[in-house]
Image (cartoon, rainbow, N blue to C red; front, top):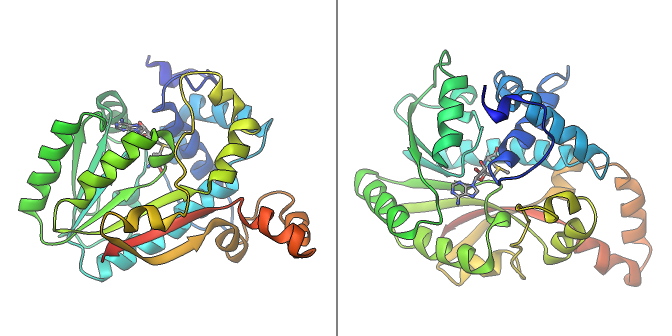
Length: 290
Ligand code: SAM
């Protein structure tokens, strides 16, 4: 039995966060009015994912933001494919099951990259499932720069137009690691779109001090939140075609955080209140080549 099949709530390696977010997708999928249905999320999250999610509930729930992120990225990904992406490169794919559950053209090529043991666990759990497009898995520690560059080069040569996704990855990198990854994602000319999620520095700081202090005490920390949001990526030749704020999207989708109404009242209370609260947010960026 893999350690992932035990109800240990500890987040001792960054790949454990994939179990955690899968548990929230399982939770959403059980609702009658689910925004998406991920039929594999429950088995992928397993008892470990459920235990991690349960332990986080004692701080502040992350469910609403992960569920909002999944639903909004579903829309953004389908749009990029409609605009002509023939290849999706999902960096840090974790236990995402979009190749199985989204209405994708069967000619689409979808490449998932994550740590070798994470992808082995996923392949085992999904052995009986059928993807809707051509799916490949590339086991790789993405901080290994030479290997990542040669992977990107190969995909660039083999593709017409690539959509890159880094859902839930950048926040776990250091500033240097995030800058280097951004440089490498920006180099291949056929990497035309990039969907990334980023927190504001204020939200990151608050999360580290409150909700995720159990992470901060161990190996796994949330670390990267670029000041200026999209401006960070613009320096590498991207422009933000779409910027969608989690606070706005979660309201649109009916999945707001607990106490959202109180936060809104504080934000509306006047010029003193508005700025600080508006800065505690996260964005989903639809980046395009400038
Ligand atoms: N994108 C998936 C999703 O949204 O469900 C997973 C997100 S999970 C919060 C973070 C993922 O990043 C994990 O699957 C973890 O293994 C992966 N990850 C973090 N650092 C990595 C690295 N250096 N190389 C490969 N994968 C990495």
